[in-house]
Length: 486
Image 1: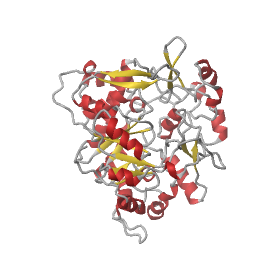
Image 2 (image 1 turned 120 degrees about the vertical axis):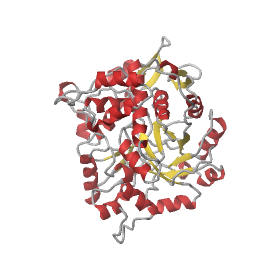
Image 3 (image 1 turned 180 degrees about the vertical axis):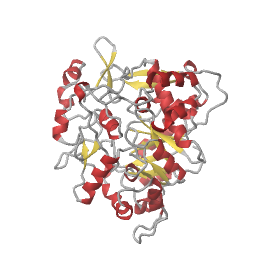
Image 4 (image 1 turned 90 degrees about the vertical axis):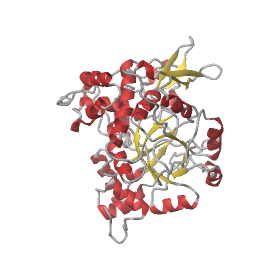
């Protein structure tokens, strides 16, 4: 555990490119921990290049990378100077496997580098990257790329990232890393191994050791914090303690699953983390899920936390990657009192509960869900399994039903699954155009407390900045009197 002083506010790592580099940069410049989302960052880079790289930011970042030839090759192959033609689909590349295509690994490294580099360039604030433990295959090269750009912190949830601290230690020395990989329907432990060797991609000898970022697992219980302190492969630097009110994926309730009147998982007091026990561990920690307000920050401090992680308020600010049209639709539902967030126990192919905002024109609408062709062409949330011949294959419960069943899956596991990969990509403006011209609809996720946006909307209208959010949370903007330091 480092003695570094960390900010009171951590901006959540949201969606696919919702917490993109402009948002992380704005939060970091305001003196807090800005966080870029690393989820599908390889595909985000690819699609930005095909869209003509508005502003030239991707090319500028790639040319600053320690892999100039790799960057030049990626630009030459994928950059379209005038953007895609009308109705032209984005390029498709092979999905991730245990032996990934070299282009895929290169895009992951460069995507992780570019996103962090752009968030940090020209300003002295701290920047982190958020990754999902469940999305195992791309994480090693993304982490190495982010570390080459000087990332300050790594945040990981949606699983138990026990091996990541040791991975960070070795990547800082440019050493080969290996990490166990979960395989279903396999005998014994059911684990395979993912490997990544920075030397396989080096274009020159490493000049020096890389900065080892702080590591902050996202947890929902004190017992998990204790386990990670004792059994992680390297140092844990603090914890994000996330409750069931947080957006995105939630930890399932403990014990037998129960449902409320509308089909949401029921969380009991035992599902709430013992904050007192976590505080006694002596590690920095931040509370998340329903703490995105000025009173929430005060409450966190009173409980011994360093501060709070906030997603929803930042997801709807001007610097967010969520497309403006979707932000405005959510604002409209808030203003007319129809805003609704549903904790869906079935939406995610991972099996984790996932929060979905009811927004017109998105996958939350039944007719849009039922009319969407079941396609799995991104595959980040696929499950790996071992077939009868001992071969490792992959399947997705949100993909074609026949294909899922042919790969050993159960029909009932396909019910009401959403293609979160395509839906979240669309929500940030990178919607794929499928065969026949079908455009992938978006899916929007937020924390339960959408009403936390109301003080900002009342003061600033539908246009408020990341700095407005920071000032509001810290108390330097008086929303009630109308006097603001914006």
